[in-house]
Image (cartoon, rainbow, N blue to C red; front, side, top):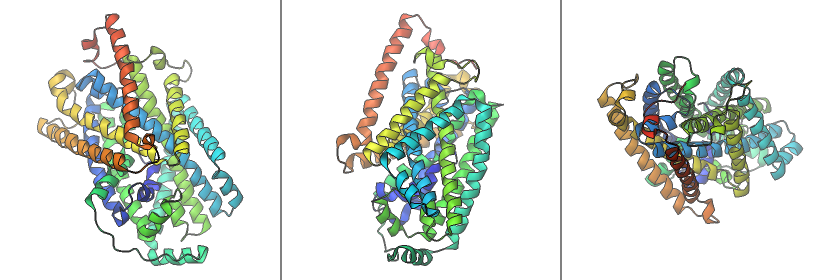
Length: 470
């Protein structure tokens, strides 16, 4: 769950939500609320239905197959776009490392369009290979990277609280000869806070990946809820400290001005007050966080495709398991191809926030349906509800389901309103109509496969009231 978004979103949100100013940390805190509610719902449902596909299995067995497919297809599409964005954002971190090492020529090359896209695609397909080679290789790759991320992030937190705005202004004057005024008073606007919270909410979605590979976990009824709880608490606390530390050193008005013209990173901004050596350490840590995101998200989206194919609502070929590596290689390659489109889309749009907006919309819809699933499961499928091992009490589940559904629906409405009222060069730079078009196309595929299953005489009610085979 500890992902790369923390190194980018807290500063680049100043571009996406102009006027948020000094209230980014408050927006982060508010954005954690729907994520925590969704995490509780996920943990409860994961304890009863530990299968590959996570959100698809939960919603299809609790609500109905179509809503399960829509929830999970939104999730799949949103995460594929996020994988593309992460790959695309990796290159500015490498650029910042080159800049810190005074390799300005290399930094300029990495900023070039063709090089940036080619390098992003190369990293993406490299880590698709990590997924293809199996869970053991995946574990050996990601666990060491996780510790390196925490270590480099801790350097950011300590250094951020060690300097202040005056130190930063002096460093900018010394390096660029530019005066950085003290942050001016900024009016508090509830609409801006809510819009920023809906964007920053997308930083907290990593716990969802835990549930997607439920069928591959040891003792999943216990380990999945525990892993979700630990990740939300530890990583959420880390995010808050990280954001507070960055804005303790860097004035928000400087961030807001620079974000309008260039892609900023939190470690790159702290590089003004740190030595080149420490700058390389924290920027490399951020790059590692991006690298660490790729195989985790690819694992998540590939297991969704695998679960669809297992239930027969996608071609059976997608569920094929490689004879040697024992991984769903067709699903992994298909998801990587969609993520590659996310890289090209980010580059052509000239702003990676289109992908972030698509991700936020998708995950808000997905999480809202998961909270609703927690409410409906005991009514529609009491047999599976009896297997719940986390939030066993009906009052607790009802409270999480009702409040979570309402909060996530409110955030979704706020996010859509912000998207549709923003000024863009063309309609297709609004994420909402793009999202609706994609969901419409997916619905047609579902309808075609559903009719085919009926013609083949599949007992659909039985199929979607029981769990897939392990």
